[in-house]
Image 1 (cartoon, rainbow, N blue to C red):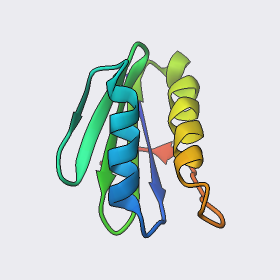
Image 2 (image 1 turned 90 degrees about the vertical axis):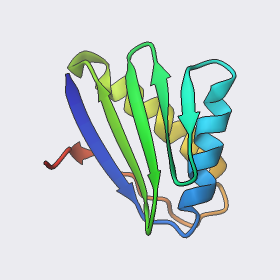
Image 3 (image 1 turned 45 degrees about the vertical axis):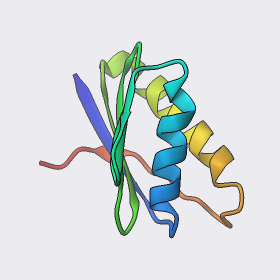
Image 4 (image 1 turned 120 degrees about the vertical axis):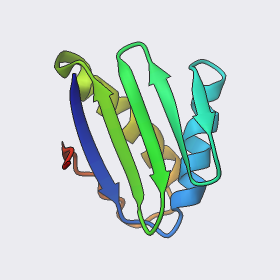
Length: 95
């Protein structure tokens, strides 16, 4: 199992958390709370956490990690089209 994290600087972390989870809820198992949620895909899980920034944590098989990251980022970028420059850089999960 691989894990990676991206911390995305934005003033709209709570909004994007809700949008991402609700968007996938019609097709995927999800759960949404006030400031966090998760989305289960066939190839892994993405946990979304709103705080001073938006934190995305992906977990899944190493061979599907790029696919999981890509689908999450593509949808986030669509929701955040008003942001001048939304930067998403994935790195290993720090313990």
